[in-house]
Every structure is written in C-alpha cells, then in structure tokens.
Image (tube, rainbow, N blue to C red; front, top):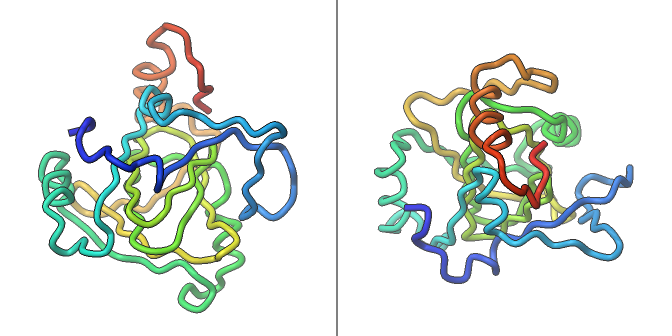
Length: 190
C-alpha cells in the first residue's frame, strides 16, 4: 500500500529542515541555504504519505483502499481556522508543543495546508501518517486554514504526550524499529 498513489505527491507534500528562529511558527522557517528533504527519507523515519483526490474524497476509491488496508474505521473532518476553532491562537500554540501519541496520527488535507515538523508541508490532496511514538508538532502556515480528515483505527484516541515521554511503550517501539535499526540515517528522527 505504501508504494501506491505516489504520482504527483511532491506537488502536495514537501519537507525541509527548519531554522531555529523564534518568529511566528506559521512562517516557513527555511534554513539558509534551503535544505529540502527527499520524501523517501521520510519513509525511512516511518512516515507514510500519499497523494489523493481531495476534490472528490467522498468517492475516492484510493482512500477507501488505504482505510481498509490500514484498518482506519473512524473518520471525522475538522476545520482549523480562526473563524471555526474557539480560542484559535492559544490552541495553535498548544498544537506546536512537541508531543507524541500512542497511536498513528493520520491527516488527509482536504483544503488549505499545514506544516508538520521536520517541516512537512502538506497541501490539498496530501495525506500523511506519522507513526505511533514519533515526536512531532503541528501548525498551520500563514494562510491560517486547513480542513483535514482525521482517521483512526477503532475509537479515536486524542491524548498527546508532551516531551519527555520516552518511557511509553509506543516511544520505545518507535525508537527500536526506526532509530536503533542501524544504518546511515540521513534525517534525524527527533
């Protein structure tokens, strides 16, 4: 499944190393010079991604195949923007705190865009799966809008565990599977 639905993925998902600036988290934060990360390097960290048809997601057979193959039985749609999310600025800052989940985090961008740190910019039609146990952050870009589909295996689990939570089984499994597997890691897994 991971090798399917890849045509045009680079148009809707990009990744780069971030600078250390304290400016607004929604800005791109490219290093100088810019350092882009090939998407195949993200897969080495356990991140899955696809390009799907966000204009017709209700009828998208590829999305149905992914959901069936990966057991994503629960789905909802959330709009994250100042007009629709109460206490928007505080929540965006909270989302940006480095954290992990004990289950995969799946986001399918239906409209707008978001950035996930290394900095993975996901645009309309892009879908990513962050493995359980991987520390990450979430923010929007300067357009301040995303409409995303969230998928879960079974009932949704919303609990973020802010760093440090290296003692959790999900983190230990991630570290063992991805980071300690040996070999040359071109991308640091935080």
